[in-house]
Amino acid sequence: MLFRSREAGKNWNDDASAAADRAIKLQQQYSKSSDVWRFHTADEMFHRNFSSTARLDGIWDTISSVKTHIDRVRRLAIPVKGHMEKVINEHKLVIHFLDRGDIDGAMNAMREHLDSLHKTITRLKEMNSKDFEE
Image (cartoon, rainbow, N blue to C red):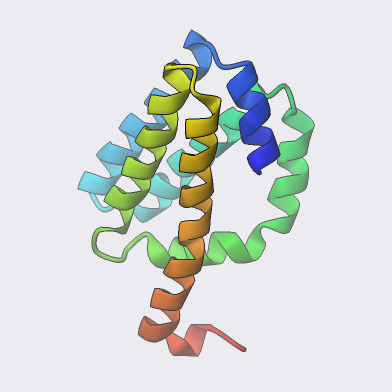
C-alpha cells in the first residue's frame, strides 16, 4: 500500500486531489448521519484513488481480493465513537502533504494511518472478544 501511495504522490495532480476531497466530504457527510456502510464505501473511494493516481489500477483488484479481514476490522471499527472522525482527519493529513508536494510527509501520514489499524484491532478485541480468534 505504501508503494502505491509513493507512486500516487509522484503523479499527484488537481484531479487526484479533487477526487480525494470528494471522498473525504462524503465521509464527513456519512459520519454525521452515522451511515456506516456509505462511510466504508467513501473510504474505499479514497484508497482506490491512490491506485488510479499511481497508474496501478490493476493492483486494486489484487488488494481487494486479499483485504477481507482488514475490511472486517474496518466495519467493526467504524461505529466506534470517534473512529470515523479519526479516519477523516488522517485522510486530510495525507492530502495536506500531497497537495504541497511533500511526498515524504504524505508517506509518513499514510504509514501512521495504516499502522493505526493495529491499535484499532487491539481496541476492538477488548470490546468484542467474541469476534476475534487468536
